[in-house]
Length: 258
Picture 1 (cartoon, rainbow, N blue to C red):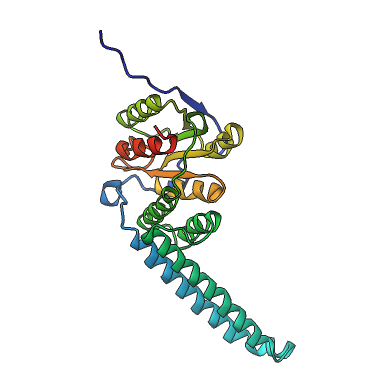
Picture 2: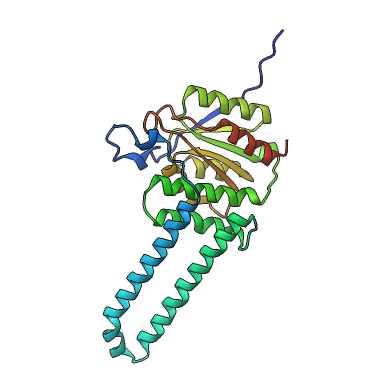
């Protein structure tokens, strides 16, 4: 007699922010690259460096225009503001360098909150480019994996959107069933915060598109260990999305130490 593999219970949570609101401007046409926004992590670092340069130039331009007015208030004020800006952008450059060394060298040079939280925020700052966000999420995941966290089966949550294909959903439930971890499906977008607040997990494996993932990571980065698995949107956003089930299983197995 054949015994079916265990499947996790699927728990639905209704919340107040509509899932997929990040795609409101989508015109219904095919997405670029068939909805696969995979990109090398170096793309994130290039855009982060470019953003830093642009902000520095903009700040210098504003200071140049305001210098006469600042000098009227106090002769030394323009110089003081200039040095403050140099210090701020110098620290930002050091942070980006430490982040690159942490990622490529596999050694965390800065505290967890500073590395992971700022990684999610700088990705959002460079603009809504799905490839850049995908690269940023890969960097974020690498930083999280380097820490080698272990949690109990009841301390891990798997969060998924409602737009997964049947094949992907069945695969997620099978994985969660094998490792005895609960799965929550998002019918609205505030799911992560509500579930995390109520369940108090010690780690989360979340599934979302790049846009929703960056929004979620910004909420919990540095506060809770999260691994974010992005989707392939071959049929457009919020419909029959696919994921890499092998990656999900390796993350779940690594976290629960099975």
